[in-house]
Image (cartoon, rainbow, N blue to C red; front, side):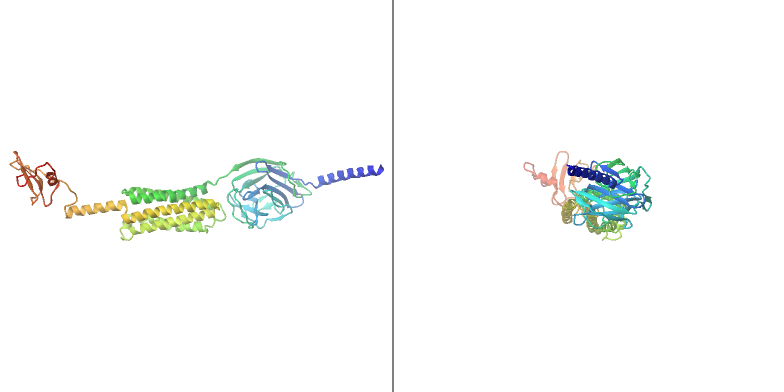
Length: 455
């Protein structure tokens, strides 16, 4: 009986002691928790250390990030994405100097602890960030009860890389919150545990994001190349009014100028395009030269310098289209667009190229409608001056001084001249070197034919 009581007492003491020990080991922490995505970010700070103990869990988007600061400018961000094999995560501490893609900072040291990895499609980070309370142009104010923080989610497409400075696509959602760092500071800090609830944090909001400039840059370029360009080829080949072709060319140029401007504005937002050394950007700038020539060579003063200049229009058009299309495809790669979109771009490019090539072959065989009309006008003027055969018809001449009141049709007499007498005078029909319409009329069945006044 006494031994039984002893065991019960020992068990109660052990449970009580373990409870006290667990309470003592639980670190002081503040926790941010977002219900929509089940994202948790917890901090624990020590009084006598500059280290920051971190627990972070979030769905496995292409990348996820949490940052210290009120905005991207001058913030310290911890970015996570899957490693190259897809069985763990790559943690990348980055600094941001503005509303641009943050850059990896090797000065920020992070020790990744056990329990870090990808579990049930969740990125889980357990780590200690050494000397993370101060960074260039920023710091963590441990005495603040509402320290500003921010978070962001990349797109849902897969991303796997071991490179801690790997390029990132623009986030699709982002938001801000505040944390009570006084509640997260204690004398014995350690990595917080999973805690799906807010504690010492206030959510300030989450927003959807869309890169309007990048999207408009792509749309304007595609409209210029795949809509206006083939229409302009048809207008140049089959319409006599050259103003339609000129107007469509101006519209294409306007769309391209706007696309270039938006592309330049977008380039400053990403590390991979800030220096303008990507193949997409280089080829786009090379394409400016033939585009400029297409715009200025049709000028009359330049075209009159040499008969070869107008002949450059078609090869320059083909070269410009090819350079711009290749640049667009490389732009999709630069923006890390998904493969289905790239394949769709290739398919549309091949269709438009085949269509325009067919139209150009037809025009080459027949000549453009404008060129044919111009040639006919030129030849017509020469025929009128030299041969007198520009048009067929009856030329009338009224002889007002004739005493017998005769009316003549034709011109000078000849072997085909025919005369019909009436009570009022005589009619002379078809008196030319060739039989005219009047002669054919006289040959109509039932119409008498008069030759030298006799039937």
